[in-house]
Image (cartoon, rainbow, N blue to C red; front, side):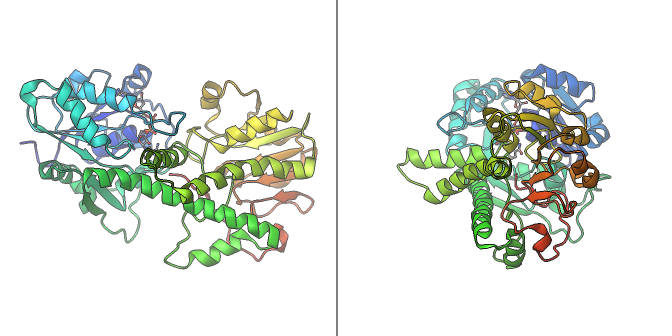
Length: 474
Ligand SMILES: NC(=O)c1ccc[n+]([C@@H]2O[C@H](COP(=O)([O-])OP(=O)(O)OC[C@H]3O[C@@H](n4cnc5c(N)ncnc54)[C@H](O)[C@@H]3O)[C@@H](O)[C@H]2O)c1
């Protein structure tokens, strides 16, 4: 029997989810080994460096390092593990279906190293319904014979958001577990006991919210747990696309989307969160998960028109940004356009499906000269967006200087705090496209275009938006 307080945990895949999970579990007192096939990441982690940008994670990593080990060798971690948590990527294939190659490879490597005692294999990656059963088959086919049936497979979908990953991991609304194995569920109740009882000392910088309710412990079948993750993301995506669709109508009828969502969000059946107009959703999850759900529907000859409409609205929303620019500048050939923010949202360096990518691509197609700035994601963009040719600026002020227009793509605090008077004074033409509806006060001779808003000067005073309030990504 494992120690009831502290378990040995192997976390497979040390990306945004795996790293946050590993560090959080070590902080709670478990002994955790993070496994990744990317040796560069493992080397960095061994040196105490983080391969990703996530606020607060470095401090928690250092506070918990005595209980953390990093390796590329499954044999060094799996045999000792009471719980094995799979957090590898499931990126989309061209047909919308997630690529399950990494899941299959990880399952095979885990299987070959099982120890014959009872071990729980947890899937935290977002995977289509039925994947848990398929992983069980892979384990059966690859685990040595005498280990047969000495393990449980549990689906434990992850709901953390990049940028607030620690907060979300330590103070979740719910922990969802899907499995046919009661023994597996009980071991995970043990793993998450301190989260469920909230009896740990909060780390500095990640305080427990006042009046926090204990997380709900939701147990379901394997298939339902897998569906819960997709359905949750699909619903949030719908909410954003709904706000964007209403925003489009607001622009036509001279209403203001900020006032409208302020008014309807107070209805407790609706709520304010994710009811936000802007450049549309981005990030590693929404596009991939909506496409996966639609593609699962197609496998069963089942249309999902509501979800498809949400995807279409999102695509249109991205095009809208450049259309707004064209409305003022007309031909963009040779115009200098500053893009502030590359990451798909503030407080992350993640560029996956970032709206800035589509915007820059379109600007380049139209012959604009693009100059960009991002407080943390520029180095990542150099690696991932080498096919785009834009100029980098070392500060937001440098990006804006001499520009014909500035597009605020990501609502970093730094852009919020910019001395906009100074910034627009250095522009060739004073045009600001705020795709996140966060700017409130600009010099009166500046043309400010937002999404679904009346001219700001004409609107009723609204509270200044806290940074991240318009973040619409998981
Ligand atoms: N990023 C998020 O905000 C988020 C939130 C909830 C759920 N998810 C889901 O969690 C999963 C992981 O997402 P992520 O953003 O952390 O991905 P990621 O790409 O950042 O990390 C995946 C990691 O897995 C590693 N890996 C791949 N194959 C491996 C193998 N065979 N053995 C060991 N390591 C391997 C990769 O090297 C990489 O470091 C996805 O299914 C995603 O949909 C992500």
